[in-house]
Length: 419
Image (tube, rainbow, N blue to C red; front, top):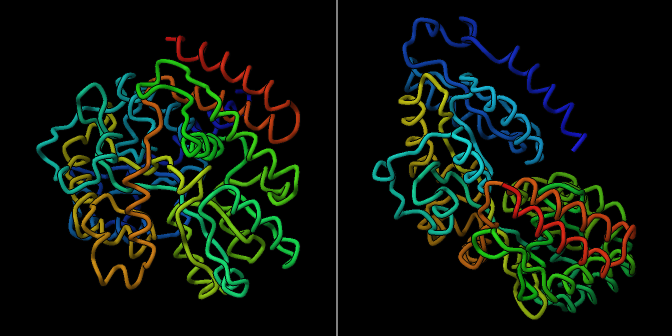
């Protein structure tokens, strides 16, 4: 937990620099606007598509001008900086882009305001995405983008070998092990740095082996044989070398770049990685498939962003209108076409024109429909730290798999009992 301290200090410094209206060169006459400016807080915009979308709103709503404040790429660091401000009941952050798993914590703490569900076309959204925005039967956020893990693979190499992408762990192990040697390339990597990304990768493996770490409402630890099978598989990959050691330092961007630069045969990543790969020398050399599981396609962990209103904001009405606009069909199409993110409107996944440009959409739709949300618990951040910390120890060979399972079971049981 000590590494969060500098992040909390950074949040204080951010507050000193992000308040007040922009200068006249950026938004003439805004200082007198009753509904703005508003601050939209979001994780690092790695595809540089957010600002053009905000520009569309700002041109149409000059009295409700929105400024974007980017936080770090890693979800853990985003949360730390948001929490530092929300705990102080600071009003400067008006609209919050929340990782889907934060809804329960932020709602329980009173940091985000409940919303009128009838104001949003929730029936157009994936049901799983809507579920992540609910807490205790109330809507506290609105789904903006959804997410599910996909397998990016070197189609050129597999085609040359007469192979299809792996559908099971055994196939992934065989292909990654043999072809990485023959083609002098890394075998497989996901997000294995000890942060929320590692928690997600491990949860996917556990689910794909037929198990779970916690029950559906996140109140009981259920670490089982499948959890050990999943960890054994990941540790084996590192021990045998088809998961390269450098993968232990990978977050999303590091794994994206490693694949995009031709250093990996297989990579687990979110849909956003597709667009940058298409705009790189990797174009025409890769494709996307469902993640492999123990005996068939994996069960991904549902991810994405939800938009919420800071309960301390003085501009809640304007913030709500912005969220209605930003989760509407026009922007949702641009979420895909400009950002390569997965929109929450399910109808876009059946659009022939979009499928032509984004051929992975049918695979992604099926993956999203089968994906599971992470356990709903107001103490989820601590739960995730326990999972990532223990799994990281095993992957780095600091602790055996059986020892890790014992510690993980004990620590999770204690964490879910902590109020």
